[in-house]
Image 1 (cartoon, rainbow, N blue to C red):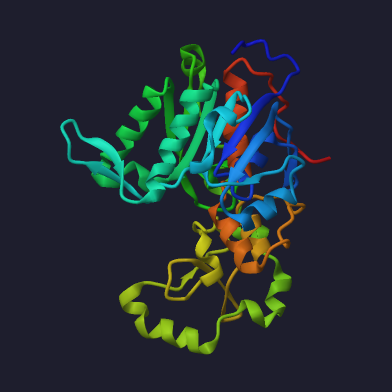
Image 2 (image 1 turned 30 degrees about the vertical axis):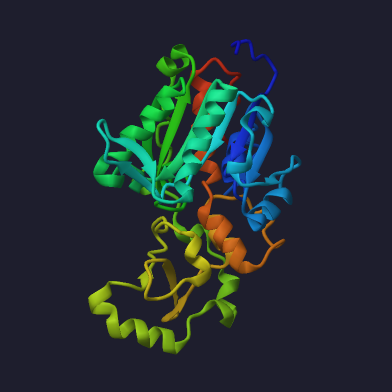
Length: 340
């Protein structure tokens, strides 16, 4: 694909799109905590996810619509042409086959999903791709899985950069660590690319208290029962649970389990006037850096938690996408600026 982008937007295909954190981040033009994240020269032309609840949230927030589809049912040749492929692929189920040389396999059906991403890259040959995954991918299978994953991407024709990024270093009120894998068909792009430098360090990190909704303190439904508290306190010494957050710091990582959050779990909770409180779905979205305008209430609260907890923070994704523009001969937007 040529480099003469001009005013033309790069086309994006998004697999495993969920409720749209990656897609919002790569397109830009949203506000978070008084900052405006400029529109980037990317346009999503195809999006798919197999979770009908996450896609309901997605389709209430984007003009282009997401298909409810299992990635295994996608015929790569039928995906619209695109310049960049996105995919936060599941990672729970990789295995290493004991062959010589050893090969990357899968323990269950979900393990195949990564290979579907590779198949699309082989068929459609986009200029770039961005993959995102949990920190544990680096150490999976005693550190053997990740090099094999990279090798699969290389075999599909891509030069690879990867880096572990902490969302709290990019203006997100959460200590979320995720691996970003960026692939390039052209060596020139690969050679020029640099991951974004942190924008918020130590004293300048966004604090949890900046995104907490104090009106939730007035509703009993968000507080844990005395029975739940007593149960946690009985085993607290052994289990180190009940993860009360310091609101003067970024939050610990939130997950899709927030709907079932328990004081015996590792999920972050708040302490308000001596009582334990869980986050509201909107607070969870704030912690993930979704704008206040992002609609959530088209599905139940339980489904909102799950979709938000699984998402990529849009602000973090914006910075990664902006780095592509900055270094790879793609039209450059203005930098993020304070909202007037």
